[in-house]
Length: 157
Image 1 (cartoon, rainbow, N blue to C red):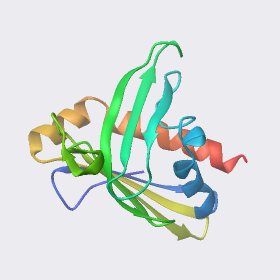
Image 2 (cartoon, rainbow, N blue to C red; image 1 turned 45 degrees about the horizontal axis):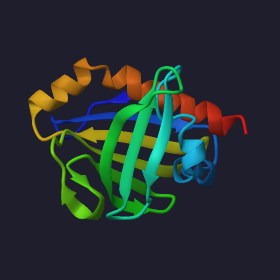
Image 3 (cartoon, rainbow, N blue to C red; image 1 turned 180 degrees about the vertical axis):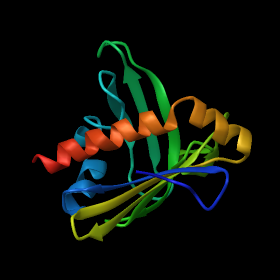
Image 4 (cartoon, rainbow, N blue to C red; image 1 turned 30 degrees about the horizontal axis):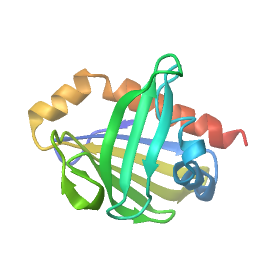
């Protein structure tokens, strides 16, 4: 389900994933599992760097053919609270160094729910123009697709 966000510069999707929070978290924390759901299929993902700790590097690449990869996200984790929350930004790279072209800070929260895990993804932007650009680029379809892929992966284990 799509949520209206309290901040006008944010885009948010919330979904109940019918799996325990530990399993959903694990799909984030294990790079080989993360690669299976992070980018909408049929594109493929490589987690080139994934230091899941504050200040840790986060770098993914994507491919249409599974052979040639191009940059997807280069950023830095800001917060990692096991089983609770992950926040990264592309405004910084590893070691808190400024990035060349900041666009988004993303927050993912994990909460227990009677039916599994309440998973919330929020893309935070610095202004309305960036938010609108992200929405026009297909935020809801793209992020919704990867959340569906995540759910399918962890719900069927």
